Length: 343
Image (cartoon, rainbow, N blue to C red; front, top):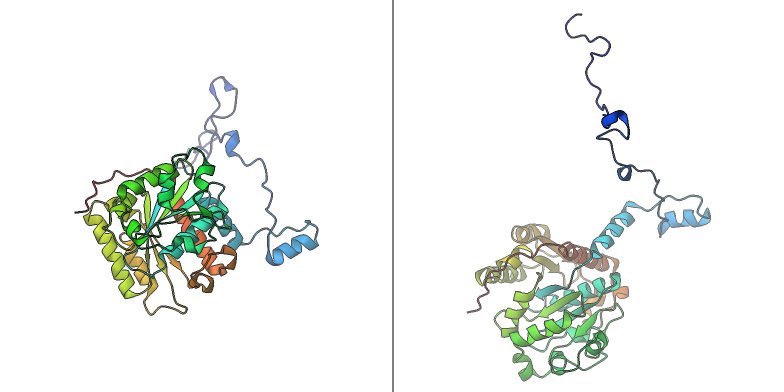
């Protein structure tokens, strides 16, 4: 037989040659298992809006063009937002510079989580300078963090709920002390005591921090945080303050939070920034895991109660994207922490 040719039974093995199980019985060895074979054709989800919805409705469901790519991408975002969290997950929202949208980011993120998830979400005002977090949702109680700590009869969720106010989104807020002298005295041990109570009843705890990094409560906030959100304006001074915050964290034993941090560039004024925000975002990505932009929104700029239904579509979407990024870390392994130093 000429070289290079193959007679019957001598040719090269086929690309897939199933091997029988010993004895010649049973399915071929190495073949796909039953649960890997797509035996059931998945039904298309009915479109929820636009011309696709109109066609589906007018045809009484006979014609189903399916969802658009945009709708599919949004559904994938929602699936990320709804990832389960074991125990509780603690988020610290901070900034060295005031007026950059830190409290707005806290309420927007918390409201997004609370409205899209089925578990309990609370935001805590740990600002020692008369924080305004409680002013961004309808006030249902005048109770504060100190009242919660002083309550000796907290055994059930309803006992904690008596000290919080709840927004239409289901986000709950625990207000800071209104007396300036008492607020300054809110210390690390007291913050830890508040978190010890809240983590028994809430799955996501978001702390709205003050602009200072050296006051006592901040040590507890950072030591207990699973991640931080660093809020900055899309301006040079805001970016420098944000960079200085990251430097301070690394220098004081909180380097593990820097690599897991999410930077939010919050626009407090309409119109585009003179700063190249894309380049600014790339700068922060060299140190942090994600950067998100929150566009200017007329409703958020009012400084009053935050209502998700009154936000622009772009602002709502940006908070959903931020929530999805944070939720990506819900199942992450807690990294070993360095000993914090506040000297």
